[in-house]
Every structure is written in structure tokens, then in C-alpha cells.
Image 1 (tube, rainbow, N blue to C red):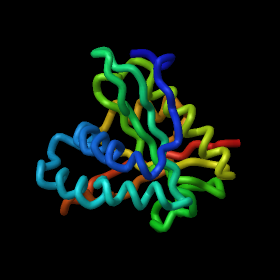
Image 2 (tube, helix red, strand yellow):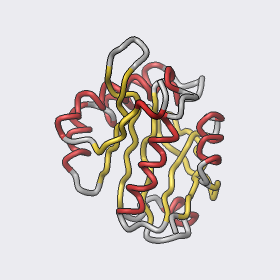
Image 3 (cartoon, rainbow, N blue to C red):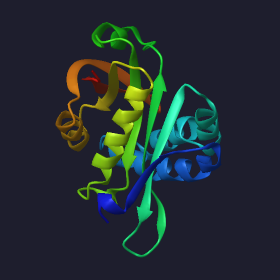
Image 4 (cartoon, rainbow, N blue to C red):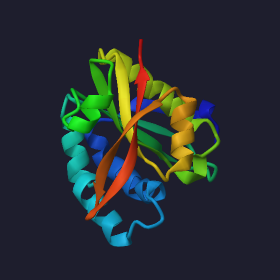
Length: 185
């Protein structure tokens, strides 16, 4: 697969089940090795279920983009997704380090492991940044686990600078994230 065979589009409420299935498949790959199966399952159930995606997709403050296209086996389907959340950070630690306003959170950004290195993530990121600009934001921020070296390299490559840290709950364990910010000017 290559980025030329992938379509990135805004997801609609009818995509909730497919995006939730993709989220359940991709989220475990971003977790640190010490994250338990139970913690991953609890996180998926709470934040990445079909019902939650239906809520996200119905909320005008959320923008969910999906990457879909031909798979090597001839099938088609979703191979990645991203979610932007408009509004100011509610976490004081994040609000203190994200310096460019207004801002938008890049809350989720995942691709299937099978498409890594094919340009799919780059195409999805370009569309995500374009959607962030359209929202009127002057910056985008995200939190990424400090142990997720691949994601950190990817975000650095796309201009997200490390501006601070935060803690993020997965199951009952607080994880340490880097907070990264991208100027959209």
C-alpha cells in the first residue's frame, strides 16, 4: 500500500463501529510494555467503544478523520484515524505549557502496524493539520507516552516540539506523556 492509494476523509456517525474496531486494534500498539491487558481493555471500553465514537462523531467540537484504501490482500477498509478536539486545554499542566492560542488537541492518531512506512501516516497527518488550521486554531498540541519512541520521532518529524509533560491514566496507572505543540501559522 502507498499513500497514493489511501483516501483521507472526515468520518461520520455511520463510521462509529469501524473506527471503534480500528481503535481497539491500534491502541495496544502505542502502550508501554508494562501496560497490562486489563488496563488496555478498560481504556478501550471507556474511551474507544462504538458508543464513545458515536458521541465524538456527533459532537461538533470533535473532528475524526479516517484513512482508508486498498489493502495488499485486495480488501478495503480503514487503516488509520485521527481525532481533533477543539477548545482550550482543561488540564492546568497542559494549559501552562501550550503557549499559542487558540489551540486544538490532536487527541488520537493511529495507523495499523501493517501500513507503517508506507506514507499513510504522513497523508493522515497532512489532512489532520489542514483540518486543525480550518478550525481556526493557531496551534495543535498532543500528549504522547514518553516510551513510545516511534510516535515521538514521527511527531518531531512533523514539527511537534516537546513543550512539557503530563500524566495520563490508562487503567489504574498514571503514565508519563510528553506534551508536544505545533504552530499552525
